[in-house]
Length: 165
Image 1 (cartoon, rainbow, N blue to C red):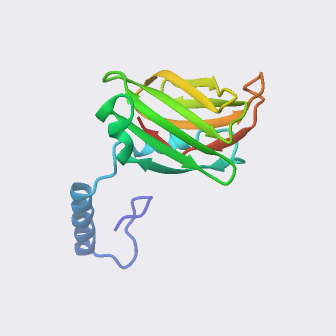
Image 2: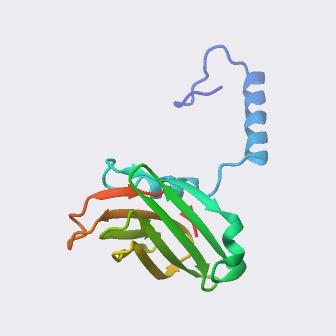
C-alpha cells in the first residue's frame, strides 16, 4: 500500500496492494460517492455564524394530494425548541417551484431561501406567513433572521438542513 508520498507502507506486499485496489474498485462500482456530495457540503457550511438553532425536518407525504398543485406538491415541517416552519412546495414548471410558508410562533422575521442562484429573501407577515413565488429547483436551505430593516445586521435565529426542491 502506498502512503500519501507514494512510498510503500511497511508490512504491505504487492499482493496486499492488489487486494486493496480490488476492494476499492468494488466500492467505486457498487457504492460510489454521490456526484453532488462536495457541492452539498459546501452549501451547508456556507453560513457565516454557527450560533443558531438547527431545525429538524418532518415531511408530510400524505398531504400532497390535498395541497394546491396536486401530485406536484409536498408539505414539510421543520421544528426546534424556539421555532416551527411549515412549507408547502408546489411545482410551477420543470425549472421552478412556489414556496408557501408559515412560522410559529408568528413574528416579524426575515425568511431567506438560500439557492445556488443566490438568496431569495421575504418578510413574514404578522401571522407568520411568507411566500416565495418563483424559486429555482435544486439544493436550498431556509434561514430565519430577526426582522430588522438591515438584513446584513439581522441575527440568524434558525436554519433548516439542506433540501432539494
